[in-house]
Image 1 (cartoon, rainbow over the protein chains, first blue to last red):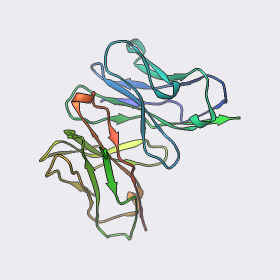
Image 2: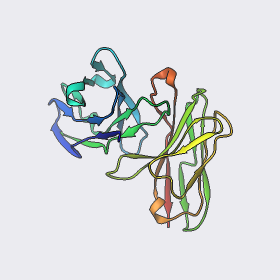
Image 3: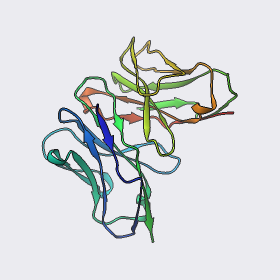
Image 4: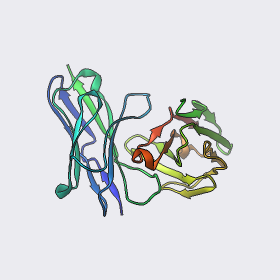
Length: 114
Length: 113
């Protein structure tokens, strides 16, 4: 079955430190992959997406993610975290069937220490 | 473009009551979905639609009903509300033309007492 897993439920980093949020997927074919961010009490905002081509994708707010087929991973990275990055982050994937459905990971809550 | 709109923003129901959460999009997207968000469980798909007149069940469909008579609208009906349906509900739309990127509405926070 198709699935998306975020192994880390909660991560704390210091402001200015680098960040990597993990995401693993289980799909038969190359999926469309997404990272969304949700600030407290807010809706979901797309950070970046991958569907083909260059495996390193750039997103908004200085985030990037790398698609690694051999590891079935799509980890999100940022070189220097800002206090405003504190939020919940969701990885999601869409399979090859034409349904428009996304499967979401459980989410990772990022806390930023001053 | 208003994007995806949802009403109401907040709702309190008593157990056994029914109601409809409204969702509309003005981007001519063929796909629409309803998700519920609960702490520690991410977003779970309730129902989805691949076009007007076509709907299907997602991961957690029990207690909910949907219909899609037009491309723009995708209402979610709670048939007989239960406390387990207390959640935040998000409607989303997407298109194959935009690589299935989901555009989300602002959400409806529902409490069932």
